[in-house]
Length: 326
Image (cartoon, rainbow, N blue to C red; front, side, top):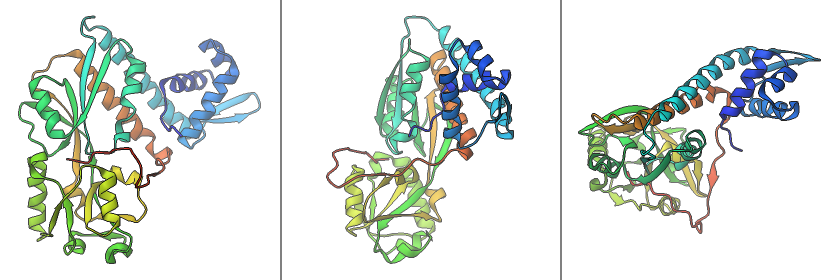
């Protein structure tokens, strides 16, 4: 089930909250009452909380509804400002080139393209998914206008703003001796072969991890990890080694593989950030960054009232390719 909350639902909710009447709200919105009621019920189902107390013909906001009303109004105001900001740009600038790192689960930002197209139909969003180092290179060359990247990376000449953190977890075979522990440390896997990436793919992050490994006297034998996540997990399931994996990729379940939190997971983690060129004056770039922050903010605001996405599974014969190179 799609657990996102769209702007239409927010507008409908605000109308009902202000009118305290489905009938008056429907009149105000120029729609009939049944679809309005369905959207409000869908919104409450998404949030997992009642927004209105219903008693006969009278309704009232619940405590959750009052809190959500304040946030919904703010999001709608931000949306109006974004539309206004984009609308002030010259008509000939109709495209925005966005890079997104492949180090994280693609579903984390899968909403960007459809929601951006819905809100700004006159602006073509061209998305390129690639390694963080390639995103940085293309930003500096002017191929990209803005990019979601993983840190640490070499970001000279760029303005970088933090978005969220992605700790690392351990992927290991179900029969691994450490599999019964709730949480692991690097010392628990120091005797295992470690699937690890080539330094040239992201020198800054590679060197960062090596410093943490050295401090923890962690020097396992290494195996170059395959770039395809399915292949990597198949090898882990066979017991050929263990892997350090961004936490968001835990949503991809593979029979025979366990994921365990790691004491050093935060230290080894990747910070997800939005980057642009220093001195970039494009209103579209500024507007996109505002759009992204607003959307991530709305996700954070309702996360306590929504359930986590269901894990996705795949079979070894799956044809979907997921890149994990850092």
